[in-house]
Length: 172
Image 1 (tube, rainbow, N blue to C red):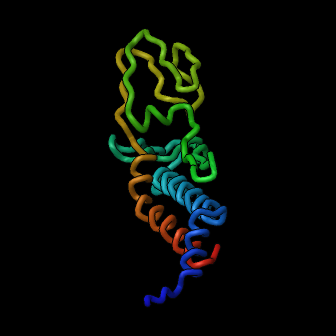
Image 2 (tube, one colour):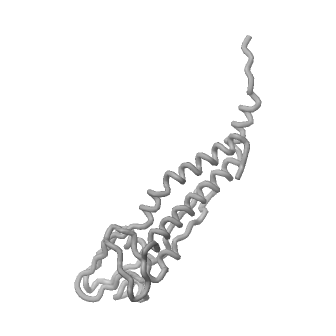
Image 3 (cartoon, one colour):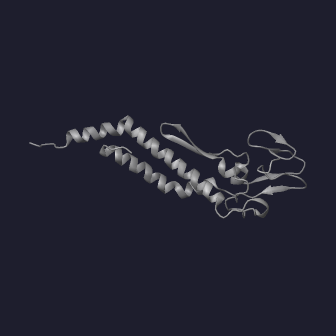
């Protein structure tokens, strides 16, 4: 005769894996991971940057250097579902910095918010590079993807730890 031990404890663990506590804990971990990405992107922009008249643009391929603070201050994390979060930059020119852009002379630049003008999406100092004479191109200065790459291992650990906590019967 075979005696099975631990059946009740195992059944309780399986119930916790499927339960609301798992969704809540993993959801918290995912949001925290998104917030880590946001902070890392902000740090990559602001570290070593000089604002004002002594501002120097970053080299192509490096994160943009902070000038007005608009870019760094408009990176946010939102909870988009029970198990999803989104970290995004809401500055109008973020996509152009992240992936690079090209604009031809005499052609209105299109903003990522859908507004156009002969000078690009915004005449404000924090707006994208203005097209004034001839061709203008902006090489990529990524800040979100490198931040995601850097924080990914920590994000995975946070989720794994949340699952382990729930399986063992604990919460944050």
